[in-house]
Image (cartoon, rainbow, N blue to C red):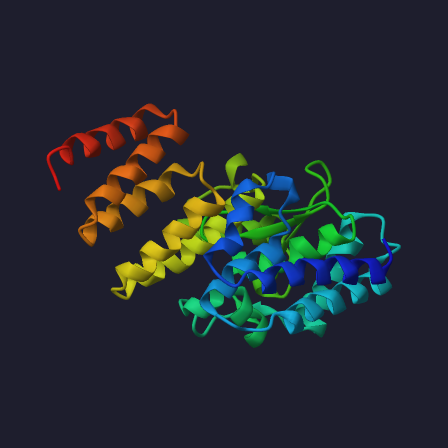
Length: 290
C-alpha cells in the first residue's frame, strides 16, 4: 500500500473519532471483530473521551507521517530483523517516543493523546504505536502478554524479533528478556510460554485501561476507576473481570441495581466455575438489598 493510501485510511479513522465526541464513540469497538480494530486509532478514540472538543487531526497526522516515513525506510524490508530496526529508528529515535521512567505512574502515560503530546508512556501505550504502525505496512506484529511490561513481537511465532518500545524499540534477546522478567517477577522467574502469548486487540485496550483504573484507585478516586471499568465492559464485553470490578465499584457508591446488572452480565460471559460461583454468591448476598 502506498503512503498516500495509508494517510487516507488514517484520515478516515480520524474523522470517525472527531464526529462522535462522547461515550457513544466507543460503542462500535465493542461490536467490531477483534481483527478489525486498529489499535492506535482505538486508543485515541478512548482517550478522546477525556478530552472533550479536542481536534484529533494533528494526532492522526503524526500517525500518518510516521507511516510514510516507515514506508520510505522499510517498504522493501522483507524480514523481521530489519523491520524491527526501522520501527525503532522512526518511532523511538526520530519521533522520540520512549518510556517515562521519571513519572511512571502518571495517568498521562496510559492516555494516548497525552502520550503523543509528551512522547512518553507506559510499555503498553508505546507498544500500541509500534504494533499499529507495523500492521499498516502489512508486517506481522503483536503485543505480548508479558507480566508487568508489555513488549512487541515483530514477525511470526517461528521467526520472531522481540522489541521493547519502552526502551526506544531496543531488541530483546533471550538474556535481556529474562532480565525484564526478573525485574517484574523476581530473580528466580524463568520465561514461560504464556509470557510470549500475543494479546488480542481488545485485551491490549483493556490492559491500557486497567493501568489507568488501578492508578485511579491508588490515588483514592473510585469514581474515576468506575468510569474506566465501564469503558472496558463496552469495548470488551466478554471480559468477566471488568464486570466484577465494575460491580464492586457500583456497590461502593451504593448503586445496588447497577451492581446486580453487572454481576448478571458477568454470568452471561463466563463459563469459568470459580468466577460464576463468586458472581452467584454476590448476587445472593444482594438479593435483599435495595
